[in-house]
Length: 44
Image: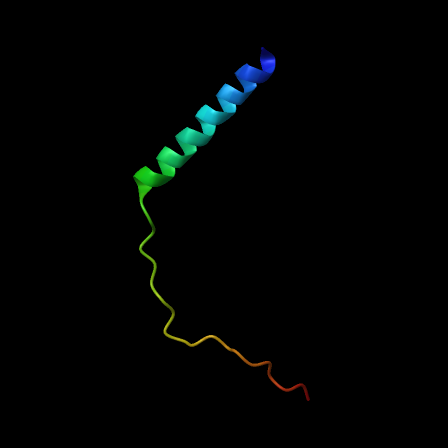
C-alpha cells in the first residue's frame, strides 16, 4: 500500500511540474549574432 501511495504522489508531482512548465510558456530566446566556432584554433 505504501508503494501505491508513493507512486500516486510521484505521479501527481510530475503532472504538476508539467502543468507549471506548460503554463509559463517557452522562453523568448534570440539567436546570437556571432557565428559559432566550428574549427579548433591552431596551437602555437
